Image 1 (cartoon, helix red, strand yellow):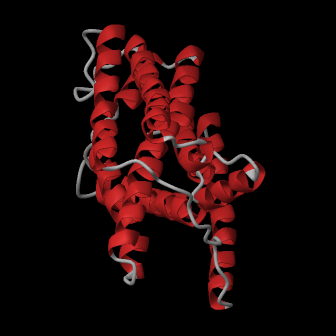
Image 2 (cartoon, helix red, strand yellow):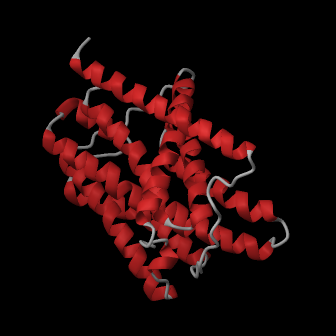
Image 3 (tube, one colour):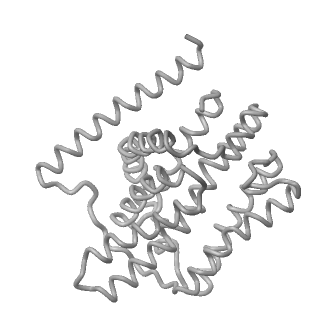
Length: 277
């Protein structure tokens, strides 16, 4: 067996064993009536619907403008993105995240803790995100495998680029984009801004209907997160977003969902770097 295939088999075998252990522990805790992730009430979410709409609309604008400036001939939809285009998209997403934080700080007076950036339990959050990754990965990839049998996935621009120009510099840029910048901008938009606002609004309007303000924000933000992506990936990413939304709802901190999101993307980048579809 080729060395790359051995590496893939070893990684997948280790992942499946660890996931089994996590799910066995989940089943035990549920059977004993324990809470999987303790609920922590959120602080303020002072932004309103206009702020949310501005930031949702600004996200693709930052992406497209940065792409046009870095590589005018590149297109995301057609899969024809270059290394310069990837760098532009990465910069656009990062600049959006910085601009979103400054905008909300100036417009609403929000502070770091209200964005979920509470570093007091960073190691515990990283551990929680890692365990959530082990629980989510088999379901996310399992759904993707099943759906791809009936719905041919579109080739991701990043996958096409790495398959054509695989190299250390490109893999490093892809890792920065997929593991650091994309999770940061997407978790800030879909979990902190959108889900946080929905939780506040629905809790105020349906105070006695707990299911509404606990479940609907996760479902709505997860659906929009999935729609933002392309093709058959949307189904598996909706499943992933449910895990991300649950983590954020329970902790109201961004780091657990950031770690889960980064781990999922890291596994994808590793597979692409090894030449695995």
